[in-house]
Each structure stands twice: as C-alpha cells, then as structure tokens.
Image (cartoon, rainbow, N blue to C red; front, side):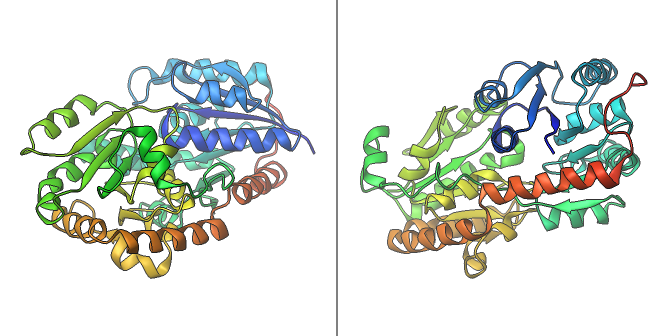
Amino acid sequence: MNLTILHVSQPVDGGVAQVVTDLVRGQRVAGHRVLVACPPGGRLGPRAAAAGAELLEWPARRSPGASVPGEAARLRRLVHTAAPDLVHLHSAKAGLAGRLALRGRLPTVFQPHAWSFAAATGALATASTRWERYATRWAAAVLCVSEQERLDGEAAGISAPFTVVPNGVDLEHHTPAERRAARLSLGLDLSEPLAVCVGRLCRQKGQDLLLASWPAVLRRVPGARLALVGGGPDAQALAAQARALPEPYRVRLAGEVADPRPWLAAADLVVLPSRWEGMALAPLEAMAMARPVILTDVPGAREQLPPEQREVSLLPAEDPAALTNALAEALADPLECARRGMAARAWVAGRHDVRTMITRVSELYQKSITEGQPTPRVSARI
C-alpha cells in the first residue's frame, strides 16, 4: 500500500536532518508520497527535496516558548492541506507542536532523538517530563533510537507504545577511505596523530570538555592534533576557549562543512564527548569508514560500539581525566587505532545498515495505521 507520509522536523541540521533525509530517500524508492515540513534554512530542506520530498515551509523556533501556539496552528493547516496517512514528528519541538496540533486525530509517530528533559534542568526539566507523560496519548508509536533511550523514558514515567529502531548509516556512502589522500586534500600533516570531533558546536556535544582535556593530551602525545568539525551556537565560545589554550594548542576549528567524510577519513580516531544523546549518528558514520571512536556513556553509545571495544572506547560523561587518558592512549598507538577501526566497520555493517532502519520504520508505519489510531486521513476537524 502506497502512503502519503509527512515528516515534521525542527531541527534542520545535524543527525536528525540526516535521519529524515535517509527515510525520505527510502520511502520514495518504495513508491510513497513523502512530504517534509520544516523551517527554512539549514540542510534538511534541500537534501530532502533532492531525495524526492515535497517541501512545506513551517517556520518554527528550536526552543519552546510563546511561539508554540502559532507554530501548532500553522502545522495544523499544513496537515489539513497535505492530507497524509501518517505524520512522523522528529525531535522535541516538532513533537510538541505536532501533538498539540493533531491530538491523535490521525496516526502519529513521535521520535524524540534524545528526550527533551535530558537537556534541561530544574523547573524546565520537570515541565518537559510532565509534558512527555501527558502527550504520549497522542502518538500511535514512540520511536526510540536506542534501548537506553526507551529505558530512560520508562524511568521518567512515560507509558507509551515504544518501538526501538537503532539509527542506520548508508554503507555505500560511508566506506573505508585512504587516510593519506584525505589529509592531502585538507592540507594536514601526513604523520601527526589526529583526533576529529564531528558534531554541532553546542553544550550537548561536549566540545568544551574536549578542549579542556587537550593540553594534558598534548603533554603525553606532543605531536597530536585535534579538529572540531561543525557549526553551531557555541562556535565563538569554543574558538575563544581554543585560543586560550597554552601554545602550541594544535586545534583546528574547521567550521561547517558540506561533507564531513574527508575529515573522518583523515582521522586516526573520532571522539564525541556528549552530555546526552539518543544515538548519535556521527560515530556510526566514523565506524562505517573504519575509524575507531571514543564516546561518553550516554544513551545509544554502548549499543553502537562493538562489545570488545566498550572498555577502552566508552567513558563516563563529563570526566576530563578519563577523556584525557583515553585520547592519549589511542593517539599514541595508530596501529591499534587502525585495527579497532576495521573491527568497528564490520560491526556497523552487520547491525546499523540504513536499509534495515528504513524497513523497520516502514513496518512501524503500517502497524500504526492499522492498529494504532482509527482515522486514516486528516479530517475537517483538524
């Protein structure tokens, strides 16, 4: 059965945008009509359109606030015009506005991509948790990208029709690549140990912790280099933090790049010291390219690592000493990095193929339509 599927997303960059684009591409190949409602700007709109989606402009801020009622009203009108069989809401803001707009009147899948309350503290965390407990009544399915994300939801008192579908990576797009050619293309030294962090420059991803640990790494591996790849709200603050490091700090802020694969190929290892996640996509892409990763033990990280690498690759969150030690030991042994990278590629190829993700999401859609909510198409009541 061919469906009309509407994806609603805010944010429009990073891993969420890539997941939405991958789903669009797979669903269009399967013959479905696919629409994407998202704010203008960012990568999601152009990439989703290139993958075959019809774009609907939905202005929405990333954070909750006074704009939410208007955003929900605009989304309700878009849904009424598009008449989808199912709506897939991506991340906290789309989940907030989308469930307020639809209130269960047609099959709705909500995918947190990391719980909103994990990013909050105090009263905001309490309010976010209460909202998620209440709003689950308006979703035919809550789609988690890791078992730990599901467990964290249950621990927060969210009683929902959970389904876990781990993130996947395009194994034909992310393949092992020759390090020398990548470094030449980026103007990097061919022999210096290189750690790369790919991710949005923001508190969630923990680049500030990485920079704080870097001087101690250099004392143990003096020739090492660090590259931060990505843009985001903390770009200026992180640049200032890097400049304040003792010379030579050997850090390069590459900024936003159209394609991070050359940086992944150039790396000896990839590091992402996140404070919270659902299941980060960048480490899967790095491992698919046969690069080992160092991650903090946040949701999704343990599940995406080969079991034999968890002891050396998985660190407590916000632990600069552990981060320093793991980076220094890895960068001092490039042959071991290469061995771990090849093992990581095999692990990802067997468990995180994007085609498997697309198939399992399609099965969830069919179940949500046939079993979840009775109204197959939006009505005039919306």
